[in-house]
Length: 362
Image (cartoon, rainbow, N blue to C red; front, side):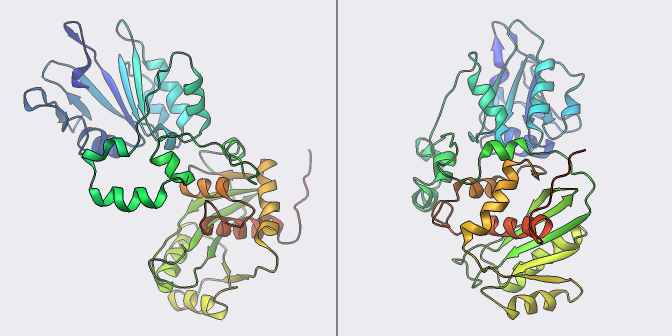
């Protein structure tokens, strides 16, 4: 950025907006590709940690701002802004809109967004603006700055997958034709804070084995508010022992003051309950057994999303990618949908255990 010099006067102040203050400082300013690192020594700015301000030798300043707290944008004024990873901001539209009101200094206020192109409502809105200039760069184009092992292992593994097209190729991946979930339905139900909950469950979809190459252990926390379900957390883990995933699930159980731990027992039977009780015998465990095909079990939960009766409290990128990639073959982008399975067990227990919850119009 080098102070964004305009003529003989630097453009200042600049807003440096990350998801949190910690990310703005650690990644945008002090990171390997952060503002400080990319400057030659004679032009290198310094970070005033006390004020959260980057100061260049020419007098330009950049203020660190957290997108997670949109109210922080009330008051400050800027001549320019850099917004990083906008696709995963928890209160994206509120933070973005408040930032626009503050971009009112100088002859030409402008802003730059660097992000993985997740198909969120805000990012689509920005891309549709005729004043937006779009530049895309693939991961391979940046190979000189990446470890060779990364390209060999990660790029090779995810090439041509939905996640790879998004993360590695910079492609905005829309809904898969025929998918039960749409990103639009998920986005329409997203909330920043959850309402009072009458019940909370932690659902676990355990893997058959605990090796690093095993399927992940899906762990999803959800609650019930009236006729709706709220997804509170995705604590899915992979490559851990049965005791390891049991500890993660039980930690979530206590953290969210859950009522029940719902565990699929098709694969492990009594062993699943025994592992959980070994870690904490006081946690009530409800067995969930799949007696129907996965697509049949999943359809009623996906229908609740279409009815706007399931809400995501925050952003769960990996979980949402899995939902939107789930196909008739029972896989999500070629992989076992462990996060999806746990979510389905949670919502089924909260809303569908005794059949569909009737809607009451007041």
